[in-house]
Length: 219
Ligand code: PRP
Image (cartoon, rainbow, N blue to C red; front, side):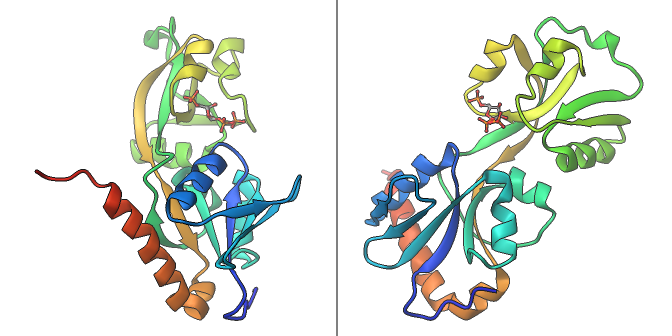
């Protein structure tokens, strides 16, 4: 457990992928700016409030669980797959996506077997979803480029995140069903929150202030 003294910056893990630019842009709108050293995986907020640790998306819950980073920014998809409970302190107004069941544009559902074959990175989510619906399912775990599975005949269906839909279109796939909305959360290690709750709450109030300013006016 990282017991950061009060004078040290709060630590936060941020995923290196597509959420990083949106996260930095959002923090800048809150008046926070960061110095990035070339190729470094750590960034410091210039007033000393925050230290960002840039990690692989799927590893982020591990860093927060072990207190290496006290807080983290993560999609609900990654949090669910980790199977770990965190304090969820804030929902960001960027990065929302959908978890979808998809197949080839020309797939005929009358070809479905009794047991649905589904390729996915999100095995926990997919298993729980289909079991919850009482649908027999074979889950085929993949690490990425999941869209290839229906194209190459590994499985007729995939469960994957769809944001703009451009990856599906490029592979001649379509959404069969939207299974869940996925939002981006600020999570916190519970022990870290107990140690730093006053500073963390002040930080969240700052984020909420920005969100309030961006709310459309009711005229
Ligand atoms: C995600 C997801 C899709 C793609 C969807 O992958 O798994 O492949 O984004 O986005 P779109 O609807 O805007 O095209 P990601 O880029 O996170 O990387 P990965 O394929 O390596 O998991």
